[in-house]
Image 1: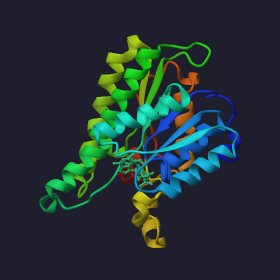
Image 2 (image 1 turned 180 degrees about the vertical axis):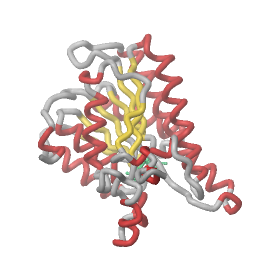
Image 3 (image 1 turned 90 degrees about the vertical axis):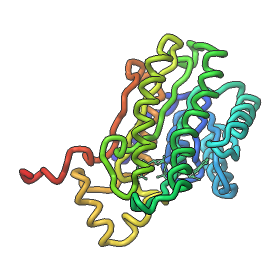
Length: 274
Ligand code: NAD
């Protein structure tokens, strides 16, 4: 049975989900999965207006509402304006998915300050800026029991590289490692406000960000050696996990990271005894 056929519609009914970087890849997958559950979607994007409009169109065909809002998540003013637009359109925001992310890969001694700074700015500072606006709104509104047991939910899209070191990707691994403790510290601080904070750590998911590692048969074969479950992930694998983590079914799950990685974090190199 496919993941989408397992979904039971309505788990996020009338809740507003703001998803950063939702015009492609995992963000788009989460937007579709949440729309299937009745959420209203804010599709954040940067520079891909046509793709964002298409995502909005696809969501509307699922009989829910969506808007596309362009904003650079690393820009404080743009993030504030994006939340302003979302709240003006839909009245509030209930769920934030910090998904926007980039890679600027380089050998450590060849890595420029720009390579370092851009990745930290988007992946870590961007998640901070969006989370801060979300928390301000969640605290203002409080719990609405007819919608959810929480005043709000924040889900970071981290990576297996919050725990697996990654040579030639030190900036990326540092940004995801940073997310791990940002998420936990926020979860500790915000529980009294009924704000639930968690992460999803994807393994290898077929999206534009990692095209080089699956687009040729040789690359895909080499990638599969790292995945005990024997397949590359699909954005809907992450969408299904995000729906559950945002719904009241996971009400007691707080401050944790859900690894959705086909076993990539199981040290597959040791499968034959090391
Ligand atoms: P992707 O390139 O399709 O998605 C990244 C999205 O972020 C794009 O839509 C991009 O336009 C957007 N974005 C980039 N900079 C932005 C900015 N400044 N402001 C707003 N949006 C911005 O790739 P993806 O794989 O879907 O990546 C989504 C997230 O998943 C990233 O955080 C990535 O690190 C994480 N992730 C992906 C994988 C994987 O295997 N694909 C594995 C682990 C983690």
